[in-house]
Amino acid sequence: MFDTAIAGSLPKPSWLAETEKLWPQWKTQGPELQQAKADATLLWIKAQEDAGLDVIGDGEQARQHFVHGFVEQVEGIDFEHKVTMGIRNNRYDAQVPQVVAPLRLKGRVHAFEAQLARKHTKKKLKFTLPGPMTIVDTVADRFYGDKVKMAMAFAELLNQEALALQADGVDIIQFDEPAFNVYMQDAADWGVAALEVAARGLTCTTAVHICYGYGIKANVDWKQTLGEEWRQYEQVFPALAKSSIQQVSLECFHSHVPPELMQLLVGKDVMVGVIDVASDVIETPEQVADTIGLALKYVPKNHLIACTNCGLAPMSREVAMAKLEALAQGAALARQRYSV
Image (cartoon, rainbow, N blue to C red):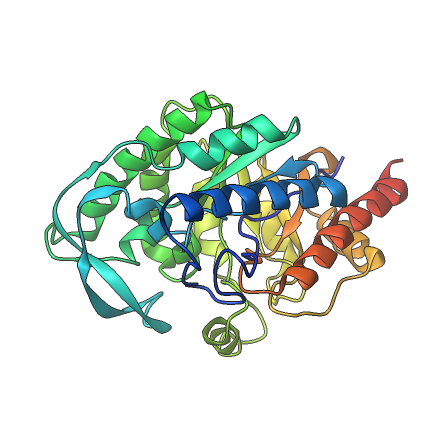
């Protein structure tokens, strides 16, 4: 009961990149940077194992950003002439590359870090990829002229990499779709369909992570405009429940998401966010166990995975480590409470 996992990202060590930033600059380059990325990946694998997590990730240590880490390896995208664009429905401005030609993969994208992680943990390995809709929302289109067409093109490339990651020995492939909480009708109309293309042919476990964003100011401010009930999940969960995606990650602790919305994911494994990524306050094991208990009103025991609300990348390393430990300890306490 109650496997534990992180949503995806973890803080970069100060010797690898700038700290507590969403778009950190690397501290070195070339072979030295590659070695630093490997060292940071191994550091976080051990930290997750030491904390007692059941599902291990690479912490996205080899990527500057969860979207651009993928699209940097795609032909047809101009990174030399970035433009400023409002993303997540203009929640904040970002410097984004431009799609200027047909999209093709240059080759493997994440072989280095996936194979490294697989070699160094015997636990279940989860690897994250950006979802098609979220990629479309994080690049400027100067070629396709149609969001759905471009999303499907990205989905085909994601599928190529996902199948290769599966061959690398990855147990769970998770697609990150924060855009599903912003463009809810589009998510239901074509976002889930694009996700199905990205996951086509996979025999490993498939997952989607839908959150309200990292704990950065723009997201915190946005959440304050959403009122006392955050019902965004209500529009996309029914479509996901009908999909082939097996696991769904959502926010719960310290959010205004009505917990009963989890009932809409009948038949799915639910990764319940029991760790707040927008606060440096460390959760107690009791708080984590209480959140799991709340979710159990709507999710069967054998379908509940204890997770973080979102990635931990912008947090300090010390806080992130303590939250990992709280996650594992809280799940252990919940097993004692709810094992009968």
